[in-house]
Image (cartoon, rainbow, N blue to C red; front, top):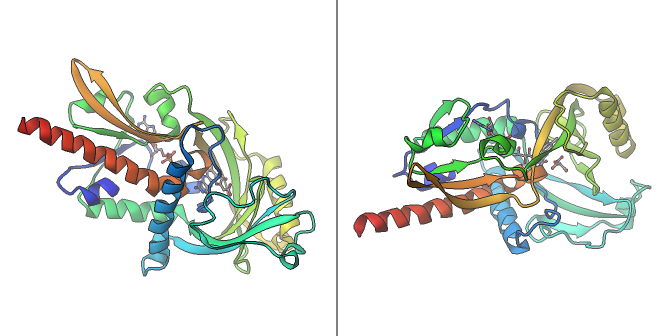
Amino acid sequence: VCIAEALPSCSVTLVADRFSPDTTSDGAAGIVLAAEFPGTNIPLERQKRWFKNSFDHLLAIAVSAHSPDAGVILSSGWQIFKEVPANKKPFWSEFVIGFRIMTDGELRRFPHHKFGHAFTTVRCDCSSYLPWLQNRFRKAGGQVEKRKVNDLQELFNNFDLIVNCSGLGSKSLVGDTHVYPVRGQVLKVEAPWLNHFIRDGDGGTYIYPGIRSVTLGGTRQEGDWRLHVDRAEAEGILERCSRLEPSLRKAKVLGEWVGLRPSRKNPRVEKEVVQVQGHRVPVVHNYGHGGSGVTLAWGTALDVMELVREHLGEKLLQARL
Ligand SMILES: Cc1cc2nc3c(=O)[nH]c(=O)nc-3n(C[C@H](O)[C@H](O)[C@H](O)COP(=O)(O)OP(=O)(O)OC[C@H]3O[C@@H](n4cnc5c(N)ncnc54)[C@H](O)[C@@H]3O)c2cc1C
Ligand SMILES: O=C([O-])CC(=O)C(=O)O
């Protein structure tokens, strides 16, 4: 969408074997919140820029008339901690709305937790947001092709530049041994009386009210490729969430879902030049966002757009010489 809208002289084709509602992104809890990538060599300033650019983009949708169609809304709530964290202010605290430390009075609702953040962020219902974005893409002249790409070489004859956003698919598509799954299971329940999110800071339990349902999570299992719903885990999620919000014991379960977070120590947002049959072909990678793909999507896409722009500038220069 970024490239198709900002560079109208380019013809952009989206090639994928799965589209909404069948992608990982469709089932994501969709909250705009991020943890620092552990052990990453991506500078914090760059992670901040990704967060801020995404947040500002989504906030503008959330406060516009597009909000209901796009499934993007403002969401207020609490992130609570059983122990006071070493870093009391996460790196994104300056970008969300009204970030503050919770008062003792607020914490009384959560007797097993000692510390918390209160703030307003954005929540994306991706089963609405993705079709809405795809519509924007088509309006900007984008083409869509549904097929599996087995090797990037299949694309080099028809395209001048490739942007690789294949998530976990990059393991086989570009032979990346650093990308791995972190399995996550969630439930959707009917509890229209809930308006505020509650997230345990360890990421193991969360309650996110949305437009049509409330998402309950979660699990984080590294290297686990199982895509089926695990009964015991579903019961565990319901139990943990009900301990935080007892009214959930009465909520009707509407659906269950499992997804694999495309995880990587360093999310890969960079240009690579690949040699194919004597030609140098540029590939811009944008994958490995782990549990923060909804949060960082727009910010990383803007970096990709800059890399695409640079490449077009170089091409133009070469053509003139
Ligand atoms: C339970 C759970 C909860 C989550 N909650 C949140 C949250 O609250 N906030 C947040 O920010 N993030 C969240 N995430 C993380 C988020 O879902 C991911 O980071 C994001 O979906 C990754 O997006 P992606 O586009 O890279 O990958 P995907 O959504 O998996 O898309 C990859 C695309 O590439 C295509 N593809 C791959 N290989 C090929 C190939 N060889 N040929 C053709 N097409 C190919 C696929 O068909 C698909 O269309 C959550 C994840 C899970 C599992
Ligand atoms: O951790 C959260 O709050 C939601 C999320 O991003 C995930 O499950 O990956």
